[in-house]
Amino acid sequence: MPVFEISDIPQLLKHVRNETHIYVDVNNTISSALQLQKLDTTIGMMALWTIEGTRLDTDRPSAGPVVVNCSMQNIPQKEVAGLYERWWKKNKGKSFAQLKEISPFEETDYSWH
Image (cartoon, rainbow, N blue to C red):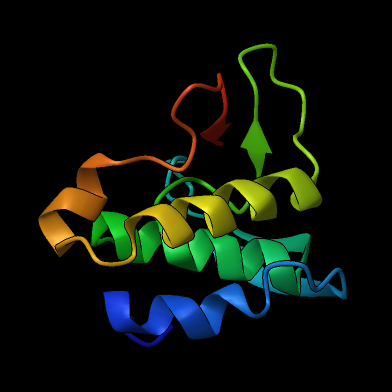
């Protein structure tokens, strides 16, 4: 994946509601076997995951592009997209260091899984 900058977030946000299914090959970095997995996801969730990685300055913000709550229930893409859109609208003028500290999931029990 290319390296993204904070300035790329507006372009990535244009895709967060795209529900086109894609299959992505990912290495399971948590497993000691480092096996390759085929992941069924959407263009939108990949864009959101990429935004999160950009915000945290990492190429892998979690094991995969899945958001769950504290009960491990998947959160719908539409809801995650709304949180990221509001987060960007409220914080787009802030520095990289500030954005790194302000989670789109503040006041929720959501996390990338």
